[in-house]
Image 1 (cartoon, protein in one colour):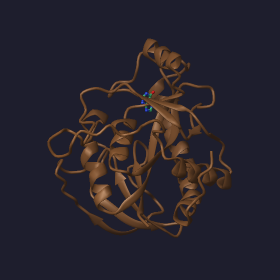
Image 2 (cartoon, protein in one colour):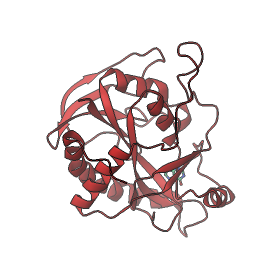
Image 3 (tube, helix red, strand yellow):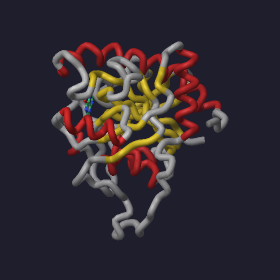
Image 4 (cartoon, helix red, strand yellow):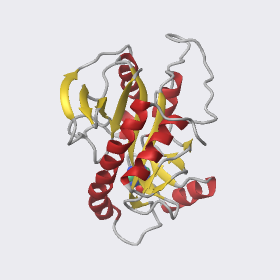
Length: 253
Ligand code: HPA
């Protein structure tokens, strides 16, 4: 059985509670990943943790080497990937500190290296993306949340913007019209690359602010207060969800 990886983002640069066994720096044909892979143990499960924005949170969303990150995880024997994402809430069920497990996404990013199938190292490939997130990993997260007693939005659409600036209110209204219920800057090309490599990938999203134009206060102040509380929820959900992945959960819609 393959290993489980957790990619931590804003608010989760490291993982308190992870019993670290070793750190491994990996080189890939695509360059270096954001950080060394941290092999450790938590809740009875062996996991690999990767800090998406690097140690010290220095790499902006558009400069993350997503190809190297996913490649390194695949090479380390990973099968399941849980991507932690701090998001802006658009739908009512994604208020600040609210948690969601999206089932679909829209990619608004541009200019990022978004495929391995560049016709040079790998032949052209049109991966099936009609279910962008792994239903098995989503189910483990949903069951983990239920067991942890944390309410989650069980569906939702993640809009992924280029960043690093936050959006304008008109951009958020457009995302809303498109059906997005949350917005992040790192969800793509991560999910697409995971699919190209045959990894089972799902996102655990935490709203840390109302998206632009939807809240009343200062966005940065809101992010600062909500990120801590939101990530506490993430950690308890992970603790409860990991055993479902190691045991293997039934496919359920
Ligand atoms: N927009 C995009 N990404 C984000 C936001 C946001 O409002 N909050 C946290 N990540």
